[in-house]
Image (cartoon, rainbow, N blue to C red; front, top):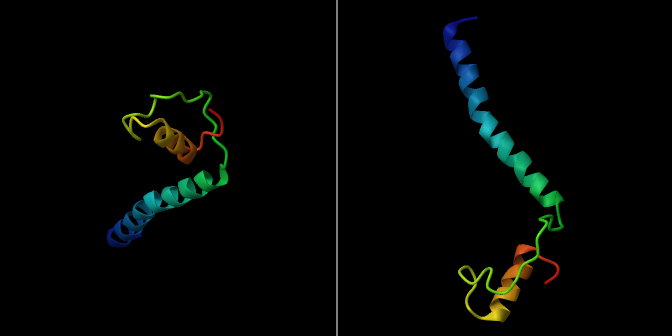
Length: 69
């Protein structure tokens, strides 16, 4: 095998690896429809991300996937 062909093929293969991992990661995220963390949210937990308003915090929690309060 010529060095030029080897470099071309290895560069193409190395360039395809990040793309393949991103595609696989995205499909695995789509498969999980339920929230799987082992803790419950509380008021004030997301005040920096939502706001001080309790209703906005509840909406943020629901958007993040928490199913119970």
